[in-house]
Image 1 (cartoon, rainbow, N blue to C red):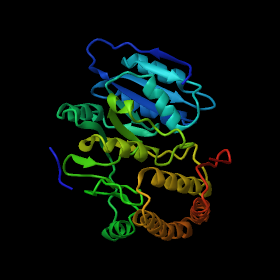
Image 2: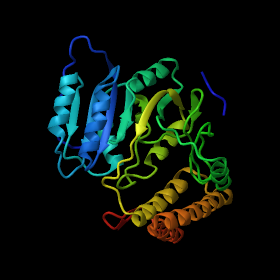
Image 3: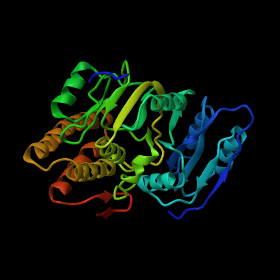
Image 4: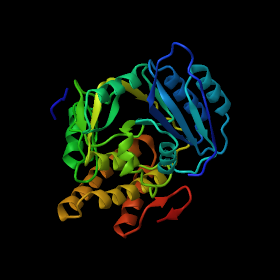
Length: 334
């Protein structure tokens, strides 16, 4: 690939101190659940930006919000307008849609609650938008710690079409609906996907596309689903000038069996939703799952966690029998 040049409660607070730089046309949205310490650290990196966003919406479905007062004070002291929504309806896709509706910036940034932005990350993303015309729909940052897998690993993942992260990858979605992610690049890249821990879009894209609220819980691949749909109408970019570190919190995660089971349900649902249902595309999905199964056997042996295999097998068999989406945390099927 060539390089190229809901009803919720909330309160809005924050007044910009004299001499501080802000961009009133940008909004940040953070959907969170039961990760108060991670959330606080993420907001700390946000208020340390060289250019502050115009507003921040935190949509919190946690049982409690122990750090809310500290976050409100942090934002007020740094001049960042805050809309803290708690309690909020549960579900990542639902919460993101709530945050989008409660903000009005021309550029909407959606970040996870366990990230750390480099100080000029926001500024660099805005600079990239300024270079483009109406064709641009979204811009994402590049990881601070880019994955650099071995050549054998890359070849294996490309052979089975199961995607992954490596430098100068294609940035495209394979026929099995797996993304080849650009972990790092020498220049700005066109991509067909964005990862939910950091992505930004022009406000106008939400007029025709929203996050799919059928995807339950933390919404595996809800980010690639949304961004891929947007990429059919707009240009999406990733810039190495903006950096963000995904710290990958272990808090509030499901066990490996239920996680793999839900992942399979979402994978089949999105493949049916977005990919042509021809023999070639269906075969690509099952071929990818074969490669993923082999990898998970190795991981299960290494970590002594059989759920990595049992969940994948259970989920694949359920989907082969026509089961719909599942929410393992509540035992529901749809």
